[in-house]
Image (cartoon, rainbow, N blue to C red; front, top):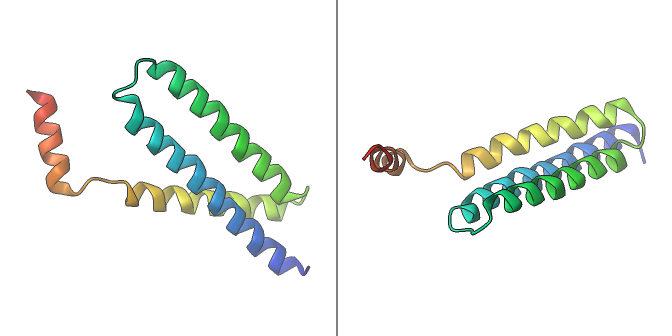
Length: 102
């Protein structure tokens, strides 16, 4: 495999890892509201998401700092993507803030 294609693959793997990590965080927050043990849910979710991300970075980089950097770049791009996809529309966000203030 050529070096360029390996770096692109590492970036794609980083994007997938970021989607799993931040999508899992969003899922955890959504399900913690009605949970009887939110601390256990958050703690377990954090450990699982972190393990998956670190293991993925380790295997995707294969000891090459350029692949690791590409993987990190893909991870951060996925953070931006997931954050924008899970954001409430401005109308709902305003009403949710007003409800909490009451």
